[in-house]
Length: 171
Image (tube, rainbow, N blue to C red; front, side):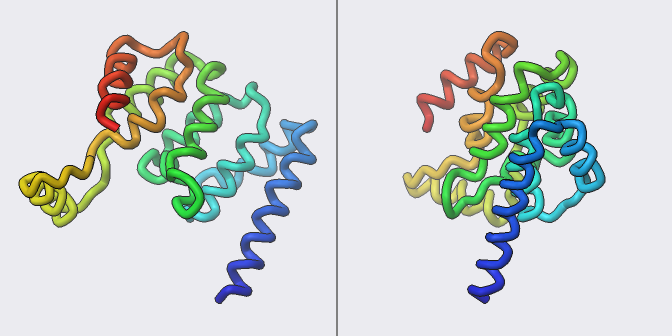
């Protein structure tokens, strides 16, 4: 119902504001968040990602590892009613990728670079049939388009830079 949605939205806003207040104590904030890292609920993960934005850059590896734990869900945690679903993950990547270790950076870059959409067979058939009718709908590259440019530019590989140039022309 509308009332339940309103209550949930208010509760999540309170959680985000509370996390901003405790940002001066990042160890305490991270300790409070740790038990919930494996939660698979999309709405919860959207709020969790918003709270992670308040962590200090010293937690870069933990944030990147959280994103990589389930990239099909966590790369798309944004609210598609308000913005592209990749925007929130992009904010996390932009903030924390310059500060994570090289191994995590490489894993993140490779995961984004090789990311495949999780379309079912019927959706793929629809995209192919649409293309045959000269109605082009991209079914690959949206994740790369939104997330590769958010990686730390001083560490990004040549192949990713080349792919960014290609997908910028495509979209």
